[in-house]
Figure 1 (cartoon, rainbow, N blue to C red):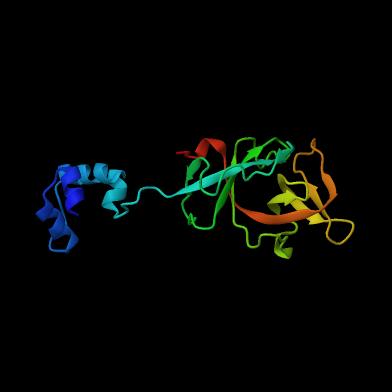
Figure 2 (cartoon, helix red, strand yellow):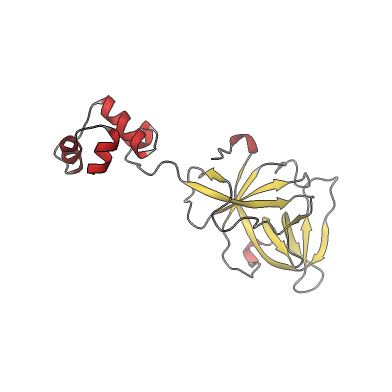
Length: 190
């Protein structure tokens, strides 16, 4: 606390009283200094969030028509970051960027998709019939609607765009249902 008071240029005794609950307030100038010293907005500081906005790493790209190699393009957590959408916890959530137009009009090139993998090598039966992020046996990442294939262990990857091609009878390493979609213009990358 002493280092924070020094960095912010505020009274250590005042900061100590606030921390101990002996006073509930500080002046606006000191609040601005403390927010700046902790690297958060004044709104976050006043709400008691001293960590700033939570972020999620963008793991890479996922193909929506485009053939994208394994999309874990960055070491875990080292990719570009996006501010965590309201209502989602950043823990266990992965974000990927859409490349291509086969999922138009629902997902567009540059949009972000958020998902959680429940198993490393699984296609959960609850995810079949839904739009999922998935990886095929050749290491390509996709966003498609997953349907059962013609034989056990095979899947059809369905495009939503009527002008795009579907992928028939492919083996998947894993699939995870899309939990949230953010159009590119709403994503706040850091």
